[in-house]
Image 1 (cartoon, one colour):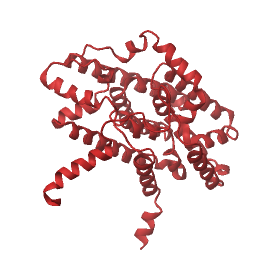
Image 2 (cartoon, one colour):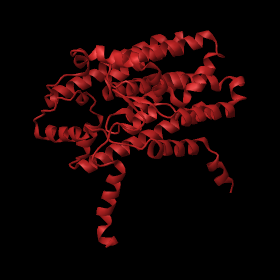
Image 3 (cartoon, one colour):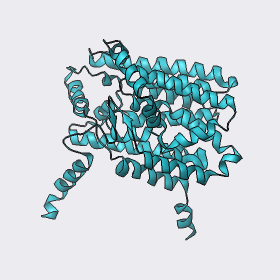
Image 4 (cartoon, helix red, strand yellow):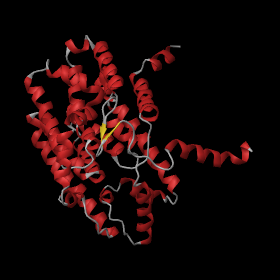
Amino acid sequence: MNLIKKISINNLTIDSLVIIFLSHIYYKITFVNVLQGEFLLINQIKAGNVTSTLFSVESPTYVLIGLLLGIDNIDNFKLLIYLITLISFGIIVINIQFLNSYSTLFLFGGWLVTCSWYIGYVDAVSVMLIVLITRNIIQENNGKLNLLIYITLLTINHSAISLAIIIILLLFIKKGLLKKYLVIAIISQLLGNGVIQYYLNYIGFSGRGRFRFIFNDNIIETATSFVGNNILIILWSGFLGVSFLIVLASNMLLWVDVSKVLLGTLIAIFFTAISLDTSRIFSLLVIPIILNILQMCSKKVEFNKYISIIYTFSLILFFFIGNYHFFGEVYKSSPMINDETFYDLIARMVNSLMSGIWK
């Protein structure tokens, strides 16, 4: 009975159930529309004839794992990506426990919408690595090698996100650790981008990369207009259920801490403004900001005394206002509508496996 009681009130258990509920039931997970193209890239690489021009080729995580495991079926590829997403969720939940009572609130940030609606992009892996990097910095761990590996992997996974995260985290590092962090960050960027370039050359990729895409006609103007015209929606989509605590903390913390949050948010908006993914990108870039402000609040007695009230107001706002996600236009449900949903995929595969028995 004591064991059951410990498990039932364990933060890790609660967080695990919350992340599954929000992603699978409240948001409803969906695959990205370009997933077929990602799978075809695996076959093109095997055949030694890469014709894909998608700049998502620069984020090779799923393709490389698919090649390593010899995936030769689109259904298996979808399941592989889904399993990687679940594993990433598990690692995220484990590594936010340093936030103590505030860990569950982190799950109500906008990043989980992104990870739920865009399965097939490398976002879940990005979030996992961002959490690992941010935790390493917040707790001032001396594991230089771990930090080097995490940032290098994030750069390989998504180089643009990695660069923005490195810059935002500069705001939250103590001066005594700044030099060490910069050296590690620069080496990681060089290593990660070197690996990506070698990979692109090896497979013979001839399409436009992310950096070149930004300077296509009207891209920056269009993206900037999107952000400027929908700034409140984008801010809400990024912070979502943490928004109430952000506003509350901004009126109670020292200005030196508040200024870091504000400046970090502005940097995130800047990088969002040169991307057409708007809410998706913004929700990922504000993760270090959310983690740091949750950590700040967890250390303040005045916040901990009213944590139940904080959760109450945060969740009321979260469910009452609902989700507003900007992806070229405003969405309240996933813009990634495929011919077959994830749930239909699972039902079809189970029916196929059990057809002989159920007949």
